[in-house]
Image 1 (cartoon, helix red, strand yellow):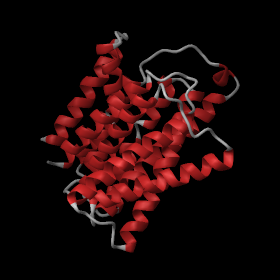
Image 2 (cartoon, helix red, strand yellow):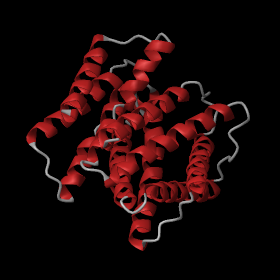
Image 3 (tube, rainbow, N blue to C red):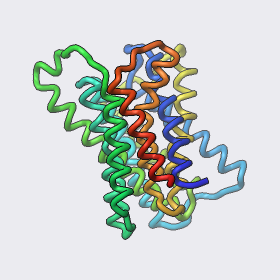
Image 4 (cartoon, rainbow, N blue to C red):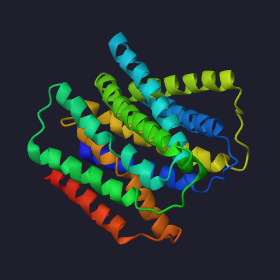
Length: 283
């Protein structure tokens, strides 16, 4: 399995994850839902490691990278949800989908050589995802009219930087042990979330009705993050995070296929552009 293949697995899982969000009611508490998703993903990874007889990260440096990745992952997740609540999809989705550019810049900083044709492929993927995921038209919300758009842009950029940092730090830790790196990343994110929920007195229980969907989302998120981090020890590891960014586009396609939501020409062209970029990277 190549880094590109692992990125496609992650994209499919995160696409299904975000598609599942559409079946949750607005009344479901945000942090309580995120807590369940992180917990299920943690149990999934811990169970897999126990079955394989694997241990925890023995390197202090690798553990530090994994914990830093967990902090970034939590920040990115909270910023993403907050951005979608404050701004329209057409504004938020393309900005968040720009994180592959940061991932490639991180790879350059670590000494990777990125030829011009790969840069063009990355830009093509990011632009395609932006057109596909951000092509929905929505009425202006109250937050947009009161300056919420600027806040949504800021939160979106924070989310993009958070995801890129998560993958860069997590892949560095995964060079020692992918499974243990994923476990510690998720454990750190969950622990910090629980502390934040206690400080802000948020509800820990999302309710019984959404629990099955949240469990499925947790498993999908667990497989997705595991796939991206597992690419850390492979050549061109940054390709995994780049390709995983098409999850937003896949969510739109799934909504079109199963919920009969309309896809505009702009969105179809975005899908074609994104897959063309992936084909170039795979060449």
